[in-house]
Image (cartoon, rainbow, N blue to C red; front, side, top):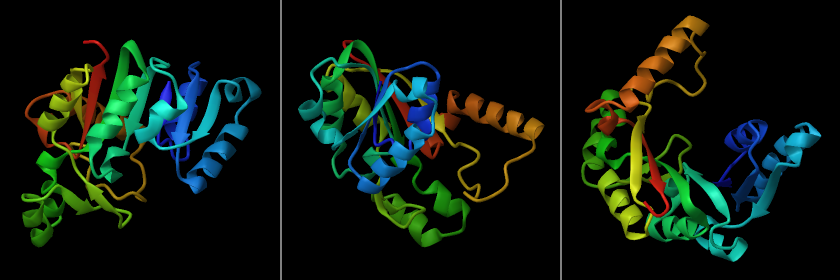
Length: 216
């Protein structure tokens, strides 16, 4: 598996714990250091299944040969890329035939919902006309539309197999808020999972999870 932009390794480490061989491709020096620390804290067997490569996903072909990975994950990265198409194409080229390309992006079709529900009408109105916004960290970011990404995936021979909505009900939950009790958390996750695969709810989720398969 290739995890592009793994950050501190939350997802990459969990995949390695599950028995997968995981490569993290990260360009931020601070995140590389954090990821290396996370890997070093794991037992030797898990460490052996992980490696960290410094680089940009848009240049994946310079780091890996064609067809090198069965799964390529690009979660929360395209948001900070001016044009998603070159990166998606580069990632598809290192994907083996039949392999899965997993993208998690901000949903441009629902960009007005968060500020609108929070009563920030100026930001909500602006979101109807532009995919650009400021994220919770104060960084300039960009959202994507499912139709455009679907066309891109088809054009590079990795057509969309399935898609889901993420954070349908919980987008306004504070990042530092307490987690619900166990039984409440189970119900929350069940509701989110159901909404994330059910129309029309998934279409207005804060995030979209798109899964393309190399070769159809």
